[in-house]
Length: 71
Image (cartoon, rainbow, N blue to C red; front, side, top):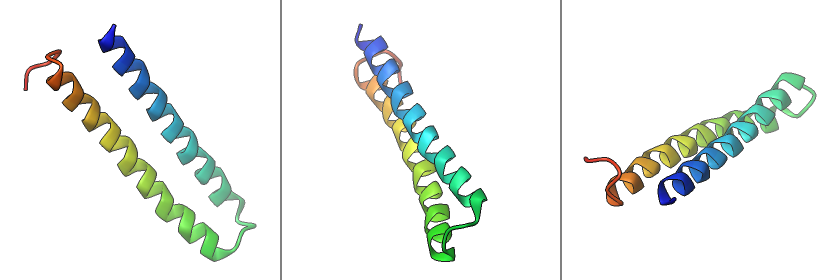
C-alpha cells in the first residue's frame, strides 16, 4: 500500500505542476499582458520544470529508502 500511496502522490503532484506549466504557456501566448509579467511567467515555467524534476528525484529516493528499489 505504501508503494501505491507514494506513486499516486507523486503522480498527483506532477499533474499539478503540469497544469501550472500549461496555464503559464497559455497566458504567455495571449500577449495582452505587460512585458514584465510575461518575462516573469517565463521564469516561473523554469521553476515549475525544476520543481517537477525534484519531485521525481525525491520519489526515487523515497522508494530506495523504503526498500522498493536498490540504489
